[in-house]
Image 1: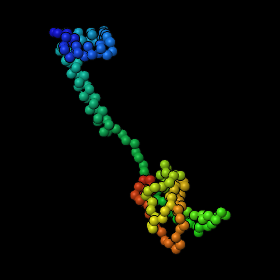
Image 2 (image 1 turned 45 degrees about the horizontal axis):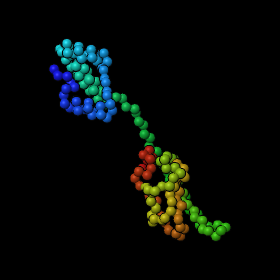
Image 3 (image 1 turned 90 degrees about the vertical axis):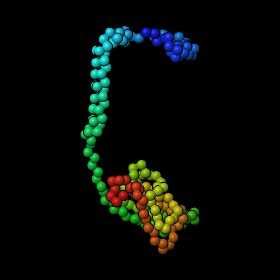
Image 4 (image 1 turned 90 degrees about the horizontal axis):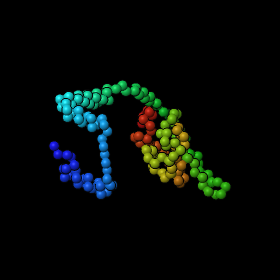
Length: 176
């Protein structure tokens, strides 16, 4: 049996390593050297050990797959809430002491928490619609209050419809 070092690819790798990082000497631990000798001395026993380890490994893998598919799952209880809506119309625009027009907002109040938690205090950019459209800013003031401040004055005598898109409310709010 030829030593491993005499194979050409091994010599090339060894030469490349020596050129890049210097001389490397490795001596395996006693148990590893002893294991190799024992495997060579008792090939039938070695095959039995390897086969047993393969069977145990395969059984362990299938057991893990079964467990992942059948492990107990926590019970998730979802309570749907009916939320009532109250729209408070805006007051008539007024002129302040500086002669500047002060816009009033429309306030949409919900009977229970309706805002996604991460949206409270932030501008709403999608999911709410005012028909006919009016330029302005929608914002959640708190978890129960949605406000709209128009950029320009509300048109006199105009009726508006308010609509909410799919996914605007959290899933626990009924009707969303």
